[in-house]
Image (cartoon, rainbow, N blue to C red; front, side):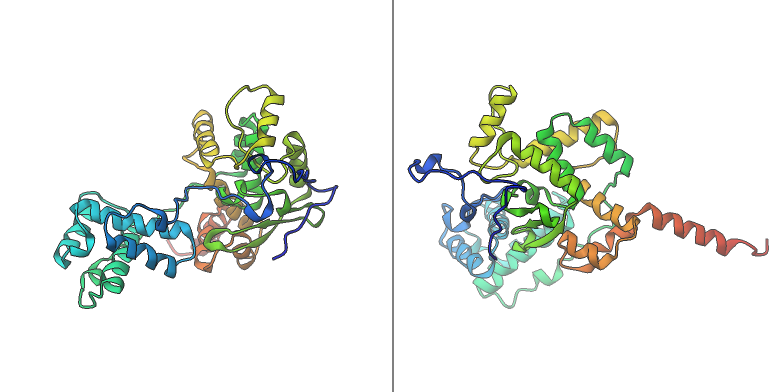
Length: 344
């Protein structure tokens, strides 16, 4: 998909001179950075055993996302570390004992247990050819119905007002206003904001998918004012770095930044803010849940919300139906109406 170059009324990028050294040149659209906890590709690891190298190669063939490859390889390394040996030498009984250990002693959560089982199945069944192993069909780990914490509209306003520094408040506000994931927000470039069209491009979201999200004019104006402070040639939320907290020094470091703001900066800030305000246990991702919940309360169609949030399955979006206060209130009124007039 062809990149959109912002015009002067939108977010204007500064160009660099070809004579600049490579280390000093601004980042270009073709090498946009990634943020988040993404490990290096498993092919680059120092493999302890040939079987692990073969597994890394299999992951490259099977999965496109580096984060998925890293997570699967890590799970197999945990198996190898547990027995302190080449995982290719393990028996089915040993693998069964391992999953008993992580489920009953380490008490892994169902999602982690399922990921580990899928990783082990790929290695032992598909790579090593143990088609007769039945241990993986014996592993069942079902998620418990736990709903995430949701803030009311007033609580969201209080939270944003409590964050005094604009360089942190603006990305958090954008996450709430557009329903973005944290990494999607911090990875935005000036090319991704189409202010005159009221649109925001999310590039390489979860699963490597792109999506287009509406953005309100007030939020576009906030982003314009924010960008004019640092005027980074590519990044919308560049890393602040360490040093003097004088506004001019901070702006200069942001203009020269080679990477986006780290995710830990906003995560720690939200934890501190919610504690000082006495709010429910909320994270940055809670604001994305609030976006979905508040839109449903306002009457947004569930299928439209699915596209806005980048969900692959409608069942994921249906979660927000359970979190809305309006639905709960309406159901309570309906139940009350059903009970009226019944004999005592």
